[in-house]
Length: 208
Image 1 (tube, rainbow, N blue to C red):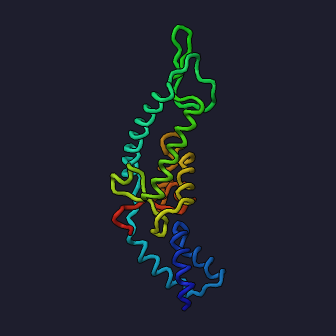
Image 2: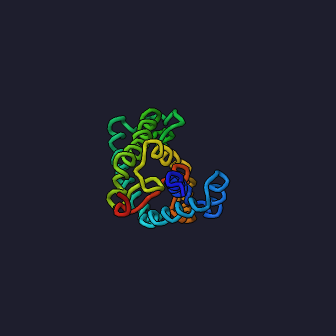
Image 3: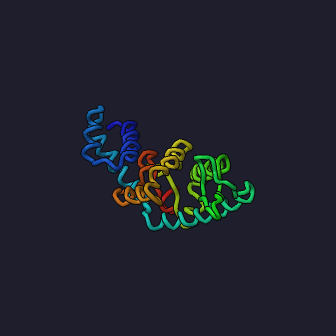
């Protein structure tokens, strides 16, 4: 048995946990690994992965509500700073808000153009930086969850960027429906962004 190869296989099995075991076995054997090395790595991977307590839609939705409250407070601050009233409507395709017509006069209430773009970037930075540095947003940390790599290791910046940029897809068509369906159909409770970034959302007590 090649211990160095076994260690590499352990990390590889953890990172590809969503695939059938037999498919992983065939790929490993075709790549030059022995049956003995793969079986040893599989035992180690199963033992370590069993300690991870994956979190599903319910508790993650509650964390999202907490984060959304924070975003609403931030939105109100942006409205005050950037004067969120535009007489005649918003002339930018990038906006957050709505147009109201009174006495045939249109008035847009919200963030239009640059303020809307800045708000979006701040929200993205909130997710990326907090999950990278702290292991979770304020919502996740409050309910006792952490985001980690599928191996149980802390997130790096690349993984955090991928999983959070993919929120655009997971959010479709409304309020994370695609993401919820993905979580429901995943043994490790991964949404689309998690699968691409190879990350998982787990209980804070199940990781180091």
